Length: 110
Image (cartoon, rainbow, N blue to C red; front, side):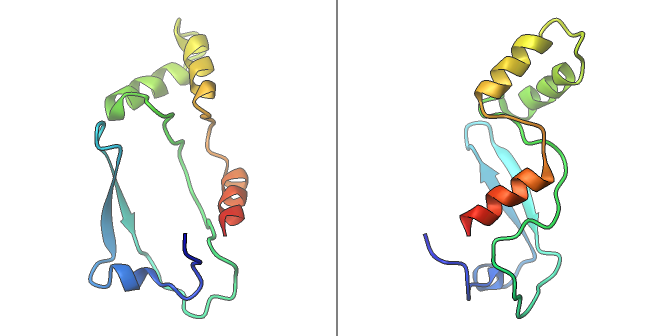
């Protein structure tokens, strides 16, 4: 682990403002990370989460197709699989996205 002070994202991706990140090569989750702005001389401690939206899938949900199915069942308390699916999700440390909780966890990494 290296301290982030003095390290700029542009040192690692100088020619690009958008990079592809693949998580879990078995399920092939693909995420694009886009640099929207560069803040020079930032005086705040890093890392900082400025915003976010949407829930992250639980581990081993079965790739993008499994995630779609999970979302349908999770959104419908009357679905016959809802109760066990939510119990399973909590066993995977899943929870709906919470900006304050997540930003606090990220700040603790710094």
